[in-house]
Amino acid sequence: MRYAIVTDIHGDVPALRAVLAAVARERVDRLVCLGDVFECEVSKKRVDGHVFTRVEEVFDAAPDLPALLADAIIVRGNQEERIRALVPEHAVSGSILSVLDAPLVYRTGFADYAHGHAEEGWQEVEPGRWCLLDAKFSGRLLVHGHHHRSALYVLPADGSRAWPAVESPPIRHGEPVTLRPDRQYLVNVGPVRGAEPTWALIDETEETLTYQRCERST
Image (tube, rainbow, N blue to C red; front, side):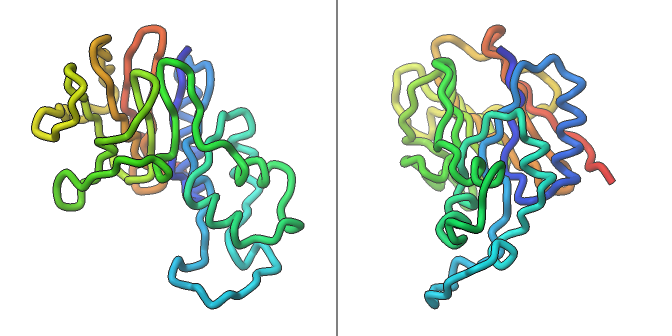
Protein backbone atom coordinates (compact mmCIF):
# COMPACT_ATOMS: atom_id res chain seq x y z
CA MET A 1 0.00 0.00 0.00
CA ARG A 2 1.12 3.49 -0.88
CA TYR A 3 -0.17 6.22 1.41
CA ALA A 4 -0.10 9.97 0.85
CA ILE A 5 0.09 11.63 4.26
CA VAL A 6 -1.13 15.16 4.96
CA THR A 7 -1.50 16.97 8.26
CA ASP A 8 -1.99 20.37 9.86
CA ILE A 9 -4.14 22.00 7.20
CA HIS A 10 -5.61 24.55 9.64
CA GLY A 11 -8.28 25.64 7.19
CA ASP A 12 -5.83 26.50 4.39
CA VAL A 13 -7.85 25.33 1.36
CA PRO A 14 -5.47 26.66 -1.36
CA ALA A 15 -2.53 24.83 0.22
CA LEU A 16 -4.54 21.61 0.47
CA ARG A 17 -5.60 21.89 -3.17
CA ALA A 18 -1.93 22.25 -4.16
CA VAL A 19 -0.98 19.16 -2.20
CA LEU A 20 -3.87 17.11 -3.57
CA ALA A 21 -2.89 18.08 -7.12
CA ALA A 22 0.62 16.77 -6.40
CA VAL A 23 -0.79 13.61 -4.81
CA ALA A 24 -2.91 12.98 -7.91
CA ARG A 25 0.28 12.70 -9.96
CA GLU A 26 1.51 9.84 -7.80
CA ARG A 27 0.41 6.19 -7.76
CA VAL A 28 -1.25 6.35 -4.35
CA ASP A 29 -3.70 3.85 -2.86
CA ARG A 30 -5.05 5.96 0.01
CA LEU A 31 -4.85 9.45 1.42
CA VAL A 32 -4.37 9.75 5.19
CA CYS A 33 -4.99 13.04 7.01
CA LEU A 34 -3.42 13.34 10.45
CA GLY A 35 -5.73 15.99 11.83
CA ASP A 36 -5.93 19.72 12.47
CA VAL A 37 -8.10 20.00 9.39
CA PHE A 38 -9.87 23.07 10.80
CA GLU A 39 -8.60 26.06 12.75
CA CYS A 40 -10.26 26.93 16.05
CA GLU A 41 -10.74 30.70 16.25
CA VAL A 42 -11.28 30.79 20.01
CA SER A 43 -8.18 31.57 22.04
CA LYS A 44 -6.97 28.88 24.42
CA LYS A 45 -6.85 31.59 27.09
CA ARG A 46 -10.58 32.25 26.84
CA VAL A 47 -11.98 30.54 29.91
CA ASP A 48 -14.90 32.82 30.74
CA GLY A 49 -17.49 30.06 30.43
CA HIS A 50 -19.10 31.57 27.35
CA VAL A 51 -21.51 29.20 25.61
CA PHE A 52 -21.25 29.35 21.83
CA THR A 53 -24.44 28.85 19.85
CA ARG A 54 -23.16 29.10 16.29
CA VAL A 55 -20.40 27.24 14.46
CA GLU A 56 -19.15 30.51 12.95
CA GLU A 57 -18.19 31.75 16.41
CA VAL A 58 -15.72 28.90 16.82
CA PHE A 59 -14.31 27.99 13.42
CA ASP A 60 -14.72 28.38 9.68
CA ALA A 61 -16.63 25.27 8.67
CA ALA A 62 -15.77 25.69 4.98
CA PRO A 63 -17.51 22.86 3.11
CA ASP A 64 -14.51 22.61 0.76
CA LEU A 65 -12.37 21.02 3.44
CA PRO A 66 -14.36 17.89 4.29
CA ALA A 67 -15.33 17.58 0.61
CA LEU A 68 -11.68 17.57 -0.48
CA LEU A 69 -10.95 14.90 2.13
CA ALA A 70 -14.05 12.82 1.42
CA ASP A 71 -12.05 9.75 0.41
CA ALA A 72 -9.33 10.15 3.05
CA ILE A 73 -8.66 8.22 6.21
CA ILE A 74 -8.80 10.92 8.90
CA VAL A 75 -7.52 10.95 12.45
CA ARG A 76 -8.37 13.59 15.03
CA GLY A 77 -6.13 16.54 15.91
CA ASN A 78 -6.12 18.91 18.84
CA GLN A 79 -7.95 21.56 16.81
CA GLU A 80 -10.83 19.15 16.26
CA GLU A 81 -10.95 18.38 19.98
CA ARG A 82 -11.04 22.08 20.92
CA ILE A 83 -13.79 22.76 18.38
CA ARG A 84 -15.81 19.74 19.51
CA ALA A 85 -15.68 20.95 23.11
CA LEU A 86 -16.96 24.43 22.18
CA VAL A 87 -19.55 23.84 19.47
CA PRO A 88 -23.03 22.72 20.58
CA GLU A 89 -24.00 19.16 19.66
CA HIS A 90 -26.86 20.29 17.43
CA ALA A 91 -24.72 22.74 15.45
CA VAL A 92 -22.59 20.26 13.49
CA SER A 93 -23.48 17.23 11.44
CA GLY A 94 -22.54 15.17 8.41
CA SER A 95 -19.04 15.42 6.99
CA ILE A 96 -17.91 18.06 9.51
CA LEU A 97 -18.96 15.90 12.43
CA SER A 98 -17.10 12.92 10.97
CA VAL A 99 -13.89 14.98 11.00
CA LEU A 100 -14.45 16.26 14.54
CA ASP A 101 -15.18 12.74 15.81
CA ALA A 102 -12.44 10.93 13.90
CA PRO A 103 -10.37 8.36 15.84
CA LEU A 104 -7.04 9.28 17.41
CA VAL A 105 -4.96 6.75 15.50
CA TYR A 106 -4.97 4.65 12.34
CA ARG A 107 -2.85 1.49 12.53
CA THR A 108 -1.74 -0.71 9.66
CA GLY A 109 0.72 -3.01 11.41
CA PHE A 110 3.58 -1.35 9.56
CA ALA A 111 2.91 2.11 10.96
CA ASP A 112 0.85 4.03 13.49
CA TYR A 113 -0.63 7.21 11.99
CA ALA A 114 -1.66 9.85 14.54
CA HIS A 115 -1.74 13.61 14.95
CA GLY A 116 0.66 13.36 17.87
CA HIS A 117 -0.90 15.73 20.39
CA ALA A 118 -2.29 12.88 22.50
CA GLU A 119 0.94 10.86 22.48
CA GLU A 120 3.01 10.67 25.63
CA GLY A 121 6.73 11.06 25.18
CA TRP A 122 7.31 14.57 23.80
CA GLN A 123 10.76 15.90 24.64
CA GLU A 124 12.41 19.19 23.75
CA VAL A 125 15.61 17.63 22.43
CA GLU A 126 17.00 21.01 21.38
CA PRO A 127 15.68 24.53 22.05
CA GLY A 128 12.43 24.84 20.10
CA ARG A 129 12.76 21.35 18.64
CA TRP A 130 10.32 18.78 19.98
CA CYS A 131 10.42 15.05 19.35
CA LEU A 132 8.18 12.16 20.42
CA LEU A 133 11.27 10.46 21.76
CA ASP A 134 9.57 8.31 24.40
CA ALA A 135 6.37 7.52 22.52
CA LYS A 136 5.14 3.95 22.49
CA PHE A 137 3.90 2.60 19.15
CA SER A 138 3.22 -0.80 17.70
CA GLY A 139 4.56 -0.54 14.15
CA ARG A 140 7.87 0.25 12.53
CA LEU A 141 6.89 3.90 12.16
CA LEU A 142 5.05 6.49 14.19
CA VAL A 143 3.86 9.00 11.59
CA HIS A 144 2.55 12.28 13.01
CA GLY A 145 2.13 16.03 12.71
CA HIS A 146 1.35 18.62 15.41
CA HIS A 147 4.90 20.03 15.64
CA HIS A 148 5.03 21.96 12.38
CA ARG A 149 8.25 20.74 10.83
CA SER A 150 9.44 17.96 8.57
CA ALA A 151 11.77 15.71 10.55
CA LEU A 152 12.91 12.10 10.59
CA TYR A 153 14.30 10.31 13.63
CA VAL A 154 15.84 6.84 13.48
CA LEU A 155 15.73 5.11 16.85
CA PRO A 156 18.66 2.97 18.03
CA ALA A 157 18.57 -0.74 17.19
CA ASP A 158 19.07 -1.69 20.85
CA GLY A 159 15.70 -0.17 21.79
CA SER A 160 17.14 2.68 23.83
CA ARG A 161 15.84 6.21 23.40
CA ALA A 162 18.93 8.16 24.40
CA TRP A 163 18.97 11.34 22.30
CA PRO A 164 22.69 11.26 21.39
CA ALA A 165 22.15 7.82 19.80
CA VAL A 166 19.12 8.88 17.74
CA GLU A 167 19.86 9.54 14.09
CA SER A 168 18.29 12.59 12.45
CA PRO A 169 19.13 12.52 8.74
CA PRO A 170 18.52 15.66 6.65
CA ILE A 171 15.24 15.95 4.79
CA ARG A 172 15.66 15.81 1.02
CA HIS A 173 12.31 16.38 -0.63
CA GLY A 174 11.50 14.02 -3.48
CA GLU A 175 14.20 11.47 -2.54
CA PRO A 176 12.92 8.13 -1.18
CA VAL A 177 14.37 6.94 2.12
CA THR A 178 14.68 3.17 2.49
CA LEU A 179 13.36 2.11 5.89
CA ARG A 180 15.63 -0.40 7.56
CA PRO A 181 13.93 -3.53 8.97
CA ASP A 182 15.92 -3.41 12.22
CA ARG A 183 14.90 0.13 13.15
CA GLN A 184 11.88 2.12 14.31
CA TYR A 185 11.25 5.61 12.99
CA LEU A 186 9.54 8.79 14.13
CA VAL A 187 8.19 10.55 11.05
CA ASN A 188 7.14 14.17 11.50
CA VAL A 189 5.43 14.95 8.21
CA GLY A 190 5.31 18.75 8.28
CA PRO A 191 2.29 21.01 7.69
CA VAL A 192 0.11 21.58 4.67
CA ARG A 193 -0.53 25.13 5.84
CA GLY A 194 2.19 27.58 4.93
CA ALA A 195 4.19 29.08 2.11
CA GLU A 196 5.52 25.68 1.01
CA PRO A 197 2.90 22.98 1.66
CA THR A 198 4.44 19.66 2.63
CA TRP A 199 3.29 16.06 2.69
CA ALA A 200 4.79 12.58 2.67
CA LEU A 201 4.52 9.41 0.62
CA ILE A 202 4.85 6.13 2.52
CA ASP A 203 5.09 2.91 0.57
CA GLU A 204 4.51 0.10 3.06
CA THR A 205 5.21 -2.56 0.44
CA GLU A 206 8.53 -1.17 -0.76
CA GLU A 207 9.26 0.13 2.77
CA THR A 208 10.17 3.64 1.68
CA LEU A 209 9.38 7.16 2.86
CA THR A 210 9.50 10.23 0.64
CA TYR A 211 9.03 13.77 1.93
CA GLN A 212 7.37 16.05 -0.60
CA ARG A 213 6.97 19.81 -0.95
CA CYS A 214 4.99 21.83 -3.49
CA GLU A 215 3.98 25.36 -4.44
CA ARG A 216 0.70 26.82 -3.25
CA SER A 217 -2.18 27.06 -5.67
CA THR A 218 -3.65 30.50 -6.32
